[in-house]
Image 1 (tube, helix red, strand yellow):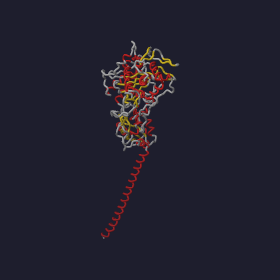
Image 2 (cartoon, one colour):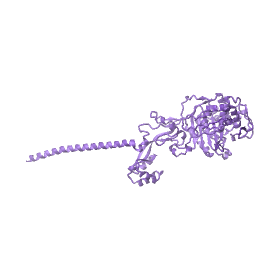
Image 3 (cartoon, rainbow, N blue to C red):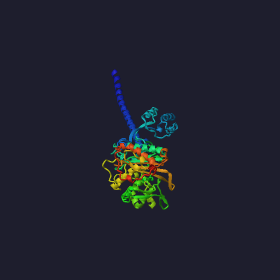
Image 4 (cartoon, helix red, strand yellow):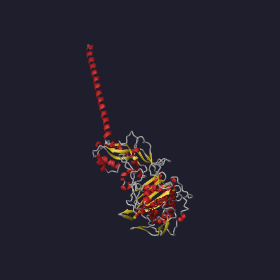
Length: 570
């Protein structure tokens, strides 16, 4: 009986076991299918996000698998522009879990650059994504994370940083948040900086960060002292054409370029054109010597009275009232003497020489912001005379620097560049004057600093030469007598010219220590003196009182009346 009872039980258990196994298999399959479905959904969501989410549109410009935008460094390897991974704090308003008002209050306390109302507007906007903070410090990321809101997201994103802040801002330019280059060398070198084959290797500019800092400091000091509306300057290698420093003030911070005004963003050294006054007298002198108009330094020109040409009168600020030779014309900055030389040169030779120096075209440099000179439309006799001393023609300070380099480097014009050039690999350039004329120009430039209007620019031991230039600004069809552009164009060391230095102040005002004068001799001359003393040793030029240009044949030609102050005239 027990055996009969036991047999059916065993049969039922076997059937249940098979049914249980089948059920387990079914459930397992269901779980696997669900798992696969969830995986597919997640993968699809991630793919969709990578393609369409607004927050990833921006970062797609720089893929995580591709090296970041290459760095920009100065000629000595000092970083000027770098790309690094920075923290960003973002919010998904459509996924907000907490109370919007409470979250907004906490965000405002941690990031006060926006008000609580502004944060609340973002949180209740219903948007899929919005940035709360970019370039966030780790401490801030930690504090915001402590709010505990799941809708807040923290990302590591590539950011372009300019570690030197405003230094060389107009050279570097900047890029937008989406990675697109806006201006400066960032834009010029955009393709190269983003080239995957070249990334990882920084791009070296010709700029020397030390020289750049000195130039910006001295220009800013003078601009503030003389209440000028702007200032600009540059330092140029006279042989290679490399720009070691280029400054335009007021400036801006490339890390926050959007906060700058139009005046801040304008590169006055390469974009703005100016009538640069008596600095052109050196150019006219070189043309006259090269063309044979001035065959001897003893040749004299009548400066006894103002020069009348038609209805125009050309006069000197400090009348010499006598015959003067070329060295005296330059030392005393005589408009009358220069005009008489230009009259002998004539319009054809004057225009031809200016064109050799590139005064009829935009400057040759890599920046996109390049101003085209204002070239006279009609070259009357008076035009030829006035452009000879820098009135009636307008060029950029960079044009002037390149021209002065050609006058002193042996007579070869080479275009300026912001790219570091390899030693011994200079472009051929074009000859504009002979070596003998260039040697004479070095003597004349040095003479102006030793005996003339450039005395306050002298930097003892550095053998500086150059020329002052003060011009009234054009206004309402005429000239504004008290709105000046004061410029000094210099070169050092003059016994072996290596560097051209330009300093310009826009509408400087006289001060007590300048006796009210706002001319270049009093305003930009001292800038050059301090600048050369600072940058000379950095560039390997040491002061040496025992060396100089031989001026022995020219010094006897300079007659100096007692009581004259050559620093007060242009």
